Length: 232
Image (cartoon, rainbow, N blue to C red; front, top):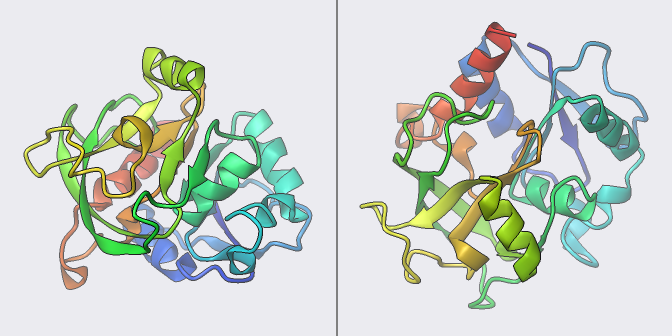
């Protein structure tokens, strides 16, 4: 499996993402600067990692969404390619029109840096097939603009089509207001595209893939990716 991690000015989670991918797949991903205009030949997975691209000026991800490499990323998506966007990567996917909705300021208007718990809402995607339906896992969150918003019609469509991948919950798996620290509508922490090949999520599974990091809760996501391409 060939993965390409896109680096924008202000990206800071590319090495964490590379460690997670290599641990799960056994292959080292390519690092690609945002000013490139083409993906490496044979790219299977494009990753947009976390950070503060372009200093989060304008809206988070708005400038990165207009970087030269994003035309190639959109073409990759149009071909049915796989894309993973985490935190700032989710914001970039939304700003690029590759996923619906927007990421707004946290309801508290404060930056959140803490663990949260996510419930796996579906397991038939390339990113979730190593979890059980309804399984709860821990993931770090580190964002100031993670409040997922979409209008009522878009929310109804996402729910009806089963496109919510992860939801903020209590450790026992309950959807509560208290578990939803950033105020996201319907407690949404991550969504997938219509073809299930693009995932955007706010918390950082790549930061829990080894006991030395404090746990391996996020590793199933990367093992899911590895399994997807092993059986492609």
